[in-house]
Amino acid sequence: MKKYVITGATSGIGEALTKHFSKENIVFAGYRNEEKLDNLKKISDNIIPFYVDYAKPETIAGAIDNIKQKTDKVDTLINVAGCVVAGATECISVSELRRQFDVNVFGAFELSQGLNPLLENGRIINISSMASYGIFPFISPYCASKRALDILFNAFSLENKRNIKVVSIKPGVIATPLWSKSVKENTETMDKCTDYKDESEYIVQNAFKNEKHGLNVQKVVNAVVKADRVKNPKPSYCVGFDSWAASVASKLPQTLLNKIIKSKVKKLGVKG
Ligand SMILES: NC(=O)c1ccc[n+]([C@@H]2O[C@H](COP(=O)([O-])OP(=O)(O)OC[C@H]3O[C@@H](n4cnc5c(N)ncnc54)[C@H](OP(=O)(O)O)[C@@H]3O)[C@@H](O)[C@H]2O)c1
Image 1 (cartoon, rainbow, N blue to C red):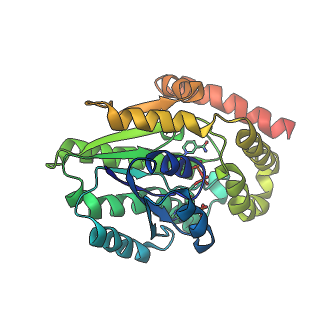
Image 2 (image 1 turned 45 degrees about the vertical axis):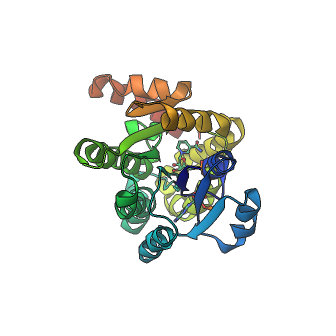
């Protein structure tokens, strides 16, 4: 049996990965909400839950100790836990920006650093996003966090002496509760952002549409399984046509790309 650590195991992509890998492997599964613990345990006897809340960085050291007490080897760490901080850049508070980086970057970074000694010859698979291409307005904290995650872990893949391979999975829109959670978590920012009312309304409607019409989580599971299995995984994998299109668009000259995006942003403001 191989040993996996999966964060964000209580919902969406992380839950689907936990269900998949716990069929034949031991999975250390990260949760932040006590109320979801029973459901997590019910998935399989191969699951060992561990508590971590990246919005409370003081909980990370305990999570690392907890895992280290139970194993001296991890084959694959899958960093899934994440959230979306959204809104017009001029309305986003620094504390919200900090929360975005705490959850999407610093949490994964600290947990990975703590587990590196156990990961010799293993893999770290990060669930990044097509947002890491950085071309989406009104979710700039999210884009910045995913880009930062990719840069830090790519450097780690080049530097580390433990033969740990690192993969960034970049899904496009996936149908998970992430979208409605993001609406709830960003309501305060949007409400106070009266100069961008139309744009905020668009973001909310778009989020609900994404939750309904996004790709099935299984597409991400398939990409992770491949990245985990192949001898020499690529540094990154796009999941979905939208992600591939974002990767292509991001290679356009920035002046041209900005012109295209700005014309779309203007239309949002006009339409409401
Ligand atoms: N859905 C998409 O379209 C999409 C696209 C590209 C990339 N992604 C990325 O995929 C990853 C998983 O997202 P998802 O779509 O599966 O969303 P999800 O269903 O909301 O799952 C997110 C998971 O992260 C956990 N989490 C959130 N905040 C946390 C914190 N402060 N500390 C620890 N855990 C925390 C959640 O716990 P709770 O269950 O308690 O909320 C949940 O288990 C994220 O990194 C996201 O950025 C998603």
